[in-house]
Length: 294
Image 1 (cartoon, rainbow, N blue to C red):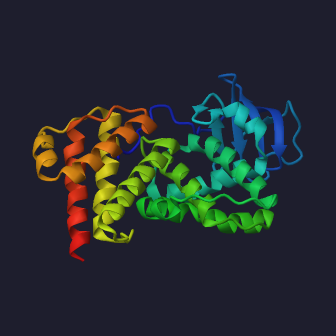
Image 2: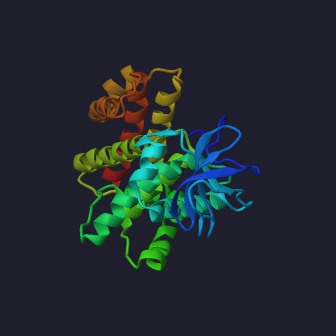
């Protein structure tokens, strides 16, 4: 996957004055930047303590300042800020601080959809509801560093809200972290994980063997599918067509690959070039052959 390049970052820096429009809690407020007359979410420890609407504030160097003109996968940034708790915004920003330490420059506009997800997750936990994600193990392997970063939410929630979060919820947060570092939104990342799981399941059904997600075979197939999706997003095309050879030589693997490509095309709403089928079939055949030998 390609790293993101930011032409218009969401995080605003520089010493500017903000007129408070609404305080959210002691640590955050919605403010209007005076020179541009644009609204921002301003966050920092104690930055809104004792402040009232109409007052002017000059945030310090450690403040996090986000444009509210962003349009995200989960809706308008301003609407999200008004609909979630300030705690969820602060927690999401803290997770992104960890992501920044791990990956360097990231797209911090992900704070809004991540906060929206966290807000629902916190309510689920407080209501004793649990979600199950059959792709959690795959996400943990596919997005290892992102999952590691997302795991910081466990201690943050214990400390701030005295609640426990499970691995399934962390898996979803990991997808948001992933979305902050590559040109792939959360739903696309989920579909990649689902395509890998479906491919693995088809091979398992054909061979009658369970495939270890830590195995080399799994990792090869996982990486191939990730690059397939990246090519579909960028419009890049493979040059050599091996479909005729694979369909004759390895018909079972070719049919399985054809099925997966069609389903990926539908779920991702991206055109999958026919040329991709042969290469996916090659990886699946390699896995089938290895599993049958063991």
